[in-house]
Amino acid sequence: MNAVATPEPAAVEIVALTKRYAPGTPAAVDRIDLRIASGSYCCLLGPSGCGKSTTLRMIAGHESVTSGDILLDNRNITNLPAAARGTAMMFQSFALFPHLSATDNVAFSLKMKGVGKAERHRRANDLLARVAMGHLAARKPGELSGGQQQRVALARALITEPRVLLLDEPLSALDPFLRIQMRAELRRWQKELGLTFVHVTHSQEEAMALADTMVVMNHGVIEQVGSPHAVYNHPASEFVARFMGGHNVFDTPAGPIAVRNDHMRIAAATDAATAAGLPATVTDVEYQGTYVLLGLALDAVAPGRQNVSVLLGEAAFLSRPYAQGEAVRLSWAEADARVLGPGARPPGERVPAPVDANALRDDTAALALTL
Ligand code: ADP
Ligand code: MG
Image (cartoon, rainbow, N blue to C red; front, side, top):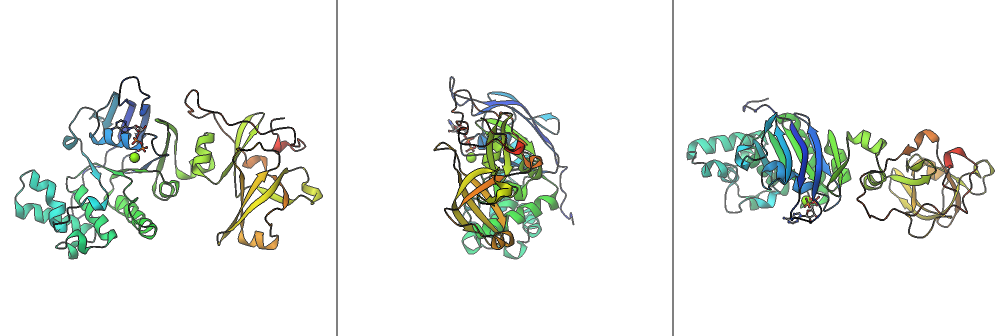
């Protein structure tokens, strides 16, 4: 399979890395530590402004480091120029030169380095063949589909034989259908090439689909590192639980807990056996095909507190449909409750008000809410 020589993939190590764009302003990236395994697909995930791109640009050498170190394969690259690091950045497909053929786009950086035409075309066409674009090498970007352009962009990034490929929101300009198709391709190329990919995205779904390791960032710090499964099943903090979605957060005397919305139990308020649950009212019923998503408001919750959701399998819902406005009781098995750590909330940020206790019942252990 590896007809073209692939350089050994490298592990990236980040030590106490900090970026402050201006003195006296909050750090955009604040003393983060991270180790990215060789040959893995790593996604930096978090809301806009949390420091993902700054982190990636510092790895690429496109942004200076305020303090800390970046190592590639145990080699300190913190102060090396971008071209000497062994990293390459893959840009969105629209960054291709429209007037150049796929071959010339891919060969562009070799031309800048003074590599002769025959040699650079040979290497560019080798790479294009590798991403299944050999037969379209003579075409210009405007004559290629979005997916094909994306592959040319990938080949163009690979021409420098990087050890680590850096991708900043590479799929965000694509329509939803193509985005899903291209993310499967990225994943396949990463496995096939055996390279380390570091991919920035604000999409939880994209990160879950792609990553071996997800790095969840917030306010310039790392909230959690782990496999998609670990992060989704054991969110470390309220921020992670809320950002990943699919979780409800409740305050209890032991601190906040998260419960996956497909692990919630729901029963009619009139059902005596479950009268102990949290009283709530169904506010929305959303049919999603395989699942039905119920939106609910806890009867005792102060305004502004995030609502609760329950995800039911279609069959479960059809066997006992709940209607908008219906009074219900919510509960969960203790084993499904995840105790949340404080996370990395910056000082002074508003902490959500605890559940208004007076109207809640305390007659089940699993619902030991703040009273
Ligand atoms: P993300 O990629 O997660 O959306 P960024 O790394 O782009 O976040 O930005 C992190 C923080 O740094 C934000 O507060 C942003 O406004 C700030 N920032 C980013 N780039 C610059 C810059 N060139 N100059 C000053 N501030 C910047
Ligand atoms: Mg960004």
